[in-house]
Image (tube, rainbow, N blue to C red; front, side, top):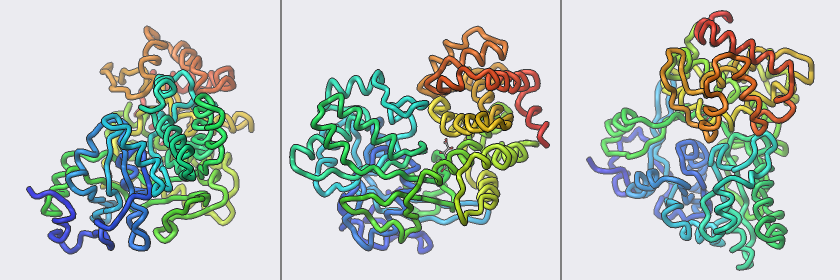
Length: 487
Ligand code: CS2
């Protein structure tokens, strides 16, 4: 079958959206580290919508690990299909903003050259929580992280995003080129500050003069939101049938999208506001709301849902009691911890979240969201619990989410079958909990992970007790029956 490309764009059916600019005239202004599905459904789509205004903001997409995305998209001139779907229907749009693809491990030098090029004015990132090589409880650089140790020893051949950013900034500094703006789009609280802190620390470990340069880099915080399940082979076949040409890596998503950005771009930026992005002075409030309500609920329903046998988020939402549990968690336990957002209808936001989770067209696997819990829970559930403890308020539903993670991350499901746990600390967790069957012992073992729980929660007796109670329920009744208590 013919492949999607600039040449075959003209053959697509009329109702398939396509760039309203000439992709061949687009030049690179943004280097994006972590060219996964989320970036392609979110920032790349916002950028695509405004490239006609200024084609100098094309994206060079960099994979930091595998060549898969480059291999799929390079033969297609970077073009790919975005399928936007919910229960009411679907729309297809070919996106043209990614105009170059690089695979960092194959050619780190090509990536550094692009990043150091004066035409590159923004370096954006979606490298997931673990890509920051930080301690999730404190937000500081993990100086013992193997990639960080490697990159400090081999600054010219980095592996981590942090190593690439600092080396590229070092080259710009010696060439007399102004620093690019760093634009993190990962689900971390105060993500711009966390990124700035880890790159500055890394630069300090390399050279104090470089650290002074890095301290002046703009690193606005952002809140990003769009649900993007991993693409499957059946998605690929459906897209090929609809387009009449093959697309090796289309991206599936929902109609909802949100992007709130601090406006701090010394070298300029695309007019993303014309595509619906919101520029705000203080993004922290939006980030906290989204991380605690959306992602906190997502993780809770992923662990409980997986344990109860639900393959997708929509299946998990259909389990008796799940919707009441998640609704109550958001309304009673999370919302009172959020700072006020004047003029914002929080109740409507919560209702919309439940509806998004019910989206029957998105097959978003609970297993996908369950990944990397040790990196996600601190900002999704534990910060909220900390605030509830301080306020002397209850947090039973949040604790059930944390207990379900513990039950899941041990790597054995309710029927005694192994779970394919993906987490940078999977081996450590297996070791810590080896041979343990009783909830008291399991909770105690997890609470030694102060990099996840912080010393305060690790040492809190009431928190420990609440977790033991929740985990006991999960062991005695199983997840499905525990959920039914909320009906
Ligand atoms: C999800 C997020 O995989 C996960 O952990 O919770 O990717 C979620 O879908 C996005 O943050 C939605 O904006």
